[in-house]
Length: 68
Image 1: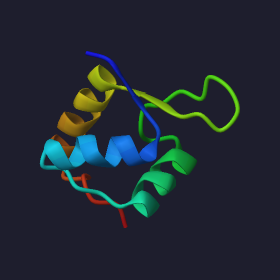
Image 2: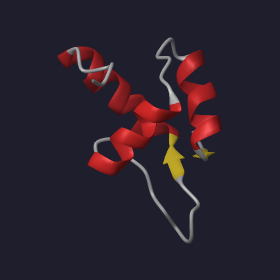
Image 3: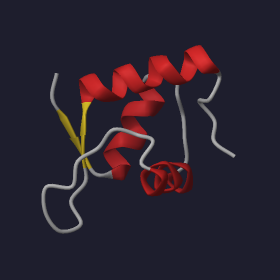
């Protein structure tokens, strides 16, 4: 699997995985550092598909998929 660049692409990916979220929810997860990501430089945010798949499964196991 590959990389997902930026929040808009991540939102599309999550929608395809039946895990819809809002940009605000993603921003909250990023600020809490609870979603796997990398910031290689500047404002660029990268998400590894394998890590996001793992994260989705973990959230489903613990019913934490939707943030408050």
